[in-house]
Amino acid sequence: MTTPGGGRVAIVTGAAGGIGSAIVARLIGEGYRVAAVDIDAAGLAALVERIASTALSTFVFDTAGDATRGVEDIVAELGSVHALVNNAGVLRAGDALATSDSDWAYVMHGSLTGTFQMSRAVLPCLLAQGAGAIVNIGSVAAVVGLKNRVAYCAAKAGVLGLTRAMAADHAAAGVRINAVNPGTTETAMVAAVIAGSADPEATRAIWSTRQPVGRMGRPAEIAAAVSFLVSDEASYMSGSVITVDGGLSAV
Ligand SMILES: NC(=O)c1ccc[n+]([C@@H]2O[C@H](COP(=O)([O-])OP(=O)(O)OC[C@H]3O[C@@H](n4cnc5c(N)ncnc54)[C@H](O)[C@@H]3O)[C@@H](O)[C@H]2O)c1
Image 1 (cartoon, rainbow, N blue to C red):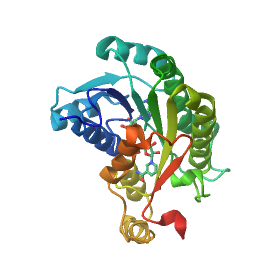
Image 2: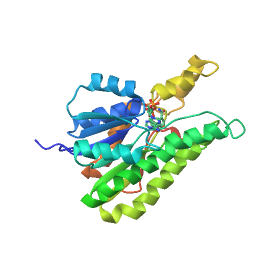
Image 3: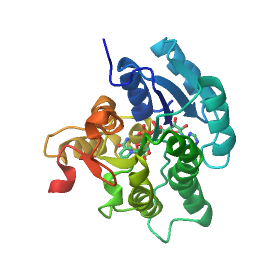
């Protein structure tokens, strides 16, 4: 039986996290061989325990700084790359006055520079094949101004700009570059923000009910959109954004 993945290689960054591990599980289920990348070695080891598949390989490196070497290691081990999912991202709260230079640099490094450097590192491989897909995980924060999220909103808006610019450059060569904008999704990133709030129980209730669907998203619901965009079903999509936010940005 043919599968959407068909043995193709997909790289997923931030693979130890909530959304990343759901993307890894989804793509393996569809027949991809997955290179799971994260800076969190223990998190990747736990992922291997949970998923227990010969289609999963793990690579520990920083997507911003070590992308060239990291992608070389992946290609040396797995032979090729067909898809890259730039999911790694980091968050620091703060309005402009409360955002230090190091907060700004941290968020840009983890949420934007890594996405750029991984894309640049993978591109020669995709162009040589004349085929491939990159999916960048943005956020609703890329298109609306969330309070107290100056660096994060700026970095995620940058991710969408990068997506469109690269799509314009490389679509004619068979490389499609798209983005998924998740809304509030139940992961460790969100749990940490809720736990650090003044009233975690009230924050959880607000964050659940502010979406028209009345709850937070599940990582698997983000993975479903990624799966579509990397597949040949999305062959006429490039430079596009799929929003998966329970209706949050519609109201
Ligand atoms: N959870 C949400 O509500 C939500 C909403 C919108 C967008 N997003 C985006 O979805 C993506 C995944 O978020 P999540 O909630 O699963 O977060 P998470 O914190 O659970 O996972 C993020 C993972 O990225 C890894 N990572 C961070 N910087 C890295 C780097 N430089 N190199 C390699 N790995 C790195 C972390 O170690 C972590 O395992 C992020 O880009 C985030 O901004 C999340």
